Amino acid sequence: MAKNTSHYTGKDIQVLEGLEAVRKRPGMYIGSTGPIGLHHLVYEVVDNSVDEALGGFCTAIEVVIAPDGSVAVTDNGRGIPVDKHPKMKKPTLEVVMTILHAGGKFGGEGYKVSGGLHGVGVSVVNALSTRVEVETKRDGSIWKQSYERGKPTGPVTAIGKSKATGTKVTFWPDPEIFETTHFDYDTLLTHLRETAFLNKNLKITLRDERELEPRTAEFKYADGIKDFVKYLNRNRETVNSKIIYLNGEDKGASVEVALQWNQSYSDSTLAFANNINTTEGGTHLEGFKNALTRTINDYARRQNILKEKDENLSGDDIREGLCAILSVKLTDPQFEGQTKTKLGNTFMRGLVQNIITQGLAEFLEENPRPARAIVNKAAQASKARAAARKAREATRRKGLLESSALPGKLADCSIADAALSEIYLVEGDSAGGSAKQARDRSFQAILPLRGKILNVERAGLTRALSSEEIQAMITAMGTGVGEDYDITKARYHKCIIMTDADVDGAHIRILILTFFYRFMREAIEQGYVYIAQPPLYKLAVGRKSDYAYSDAELQALMADLPENAKYNIQRYKGLGEMNPEQLWETTMDPATRTLLQVTIPDAMAAEDAVSELMGGDVEPRKDFIQTHAKDVRFLDI
Ligand code: 28F
Image (cartoon, rainbow, N blue to C red; front, side):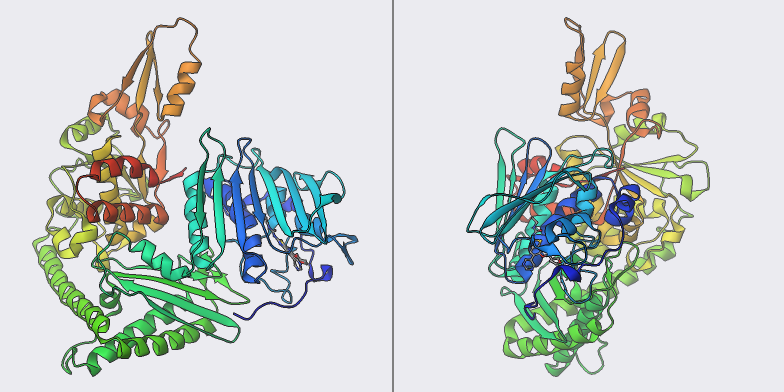
C-alpha cells in the first residue's frame, strides 16, 4: 500500500449534515441502537487510530472501559490538528468532532482506507454520547475540548505541555439513544484481536476497570493475517503445516491472503476490505475463489492426480477444511448488500484473481509435499460429496427428508402459516414432555432431541444424515439441507433451541448451532434461529414468586426484599424441574419470554467452541464448556 504522504488541511473537510440528524435517526448511521450499535461506537473511535497506524504514524492503541460506563481510546499518532479551519473558522479538532463526515473519508482527496462499518466518523460518536472529552498532544502542548450530546461546552484549550503526540477520546454513550449502555468485554476483546491481526505490528491493549480485579489483554502480531490463521486453526489438525502467504499490489490497492487447510469439513474463509469483515463477500472473494479453484485444478492435472477423464474438483471440494484470511485495501471501497458488507468494486475481482493465481501456482510448484496433501484432501472431499449426494438421493427416495413424512416425535402445531409458526428443539424426552404440555399448540411445535446430537463439524454430511436426531430436525424443518437447502420451504420461521442451563445443555446448544451453521446457514442469516432463555432461579416470597435469569438478577430481586422477609430460592438445574405452567410463563409465552436471536458470528463462535472441545483432551472438557458456554454470545432482541 502506498503511504499517504499528502498533508490534510482543514479545507478538505466537507460539511454534509448536522449532528441533529444523527440523534434523530441513529440507526441510519450506526446500524442499530442495540448492543451491536453501541459497540460500533468504540470501533469507530478505534478506526480513527487505525487510520493513523495505516499512515505509518501510530504504533499503539489503548482501550479502557471505566467504572463510570465510559470508554477511553488513546493512540500515539500525530494528534488531531488544532489550527483554524479556513472555511469553518473553527479549530480543526472541533470540526472533526462536531461536523458529520468530517474526516476526509468522503472527501475524495484526503483518503482514508479504514473506517468503521459505516465509516461515519467520530462526530457520530459525539452526537450519540452524553459527554465526550478529547485530548490531543501536538506542537508541544496538550489540547482539550469537551462536548455534551455533540455540542462543545467550551473552546479548545491548552491544558499542559508535552513533547509526545497522540489523541485520547473518552465518551459516555447516551442512554436516551441506546437500549443498553453496557459494554461487553469479550465482544470488544474479539473485535480488537481481529483488528490487531489485520494490522501487523500494531499494539492494541484493552483494560476493563469496572471490576475490582481489572481484566487486561494485549495484542500485537508480527505476522498479521498469518497469525490470524494460526489462531483460528489452533485446535485443529492441519494439512499443510506451513501457512501459505501470498500478497501483491496494483492500481493503488493491496491484496494479501494467508491459507492453511485443516482436517475438518468446513470452509472458514474470512474476507476483509479495509479491515471491514465483508460477511456478504463481494468481488475480492470471488476473485480469490476463482483463482483457488483454477490453480489447484491446473496443478492436479499437470501432476496427473486428476486424470483426463476425471471431472474438475469443485470450489467446494477445494475449500473443504480451508482456513483463509483474505485482506484487501483500496482507496474508494464500495460497500453493497443488505448489511453493507459486500465489496462491489469490480476491478478487485481481476486484481485478486491475478495476484492469487500467480502466487499460488508458484507455491504449489515449489512445495510439492504440501501441494499434494492439499490436492488429495480436495479429491477426497470430491469423492465424499458424490457419496453424500447418492445418500441424499436415496433418503429422498425413501421419503425420509420429505415433509410428507414428519418425524414421529414431532408434536406439530396446527396452523399452516410458516411465518407465524415456531418449532422448539428441546433437549431430552422429559423436558420435551413438559414443553408439549406447556405450549400453545396452535402455533408452537415441539421436537424433543435425545442425548448429544452428532458433531457435524467433524462428521460431514453423509454421516450426519445417518443420525436419527438430525434427520428428524431436517424433516421437521422442511427445507432440505446443504446444497438442497430451500428456505422458502421452511415450515417455521422461528427455530428455538431450548436446552438446560447446565454444561450438557451448553454442549448440545453449540452442537445444534454448528449444525445450523454448516447445513442451514441461510436460516441463521434470515434470523430464523433463536435460543430460549429459561430462568436460573425462582425466588418465592409467600405466595408470590419471581424468576431470575442470571445471578445478577437474583441479587437485584433479593435486594428489593423487605427486611426479615421469609423467602425460598430454587435453582433450576434443568427444564424438567419446571411444571408446564412455569415453563410457559418463563420461557415460551411470547408476551413474557426473552429470545436471543442467533447471528452468524455467534454460530462461528459455537463451531470454534466445538472444535476446541473435540480437539483437546477429553479430561478438561467439562471445565471447558462451563467457561466457554458464555463465550457463545447472543444478541438480545
Ligand atoms: C482516539 C481516537 O482520533 N486519532 C486521530 C489524527 C491525526 C490527524 C487527523 C486524526 C485533518 C483534516 C481531518 C494529524 N496530522 N484517535 C484519533 N489522529 N485526525 S484522528 O487529521 C484530521 C484531518 O481533515 C492528522 C496531520 N494530518 C492528520
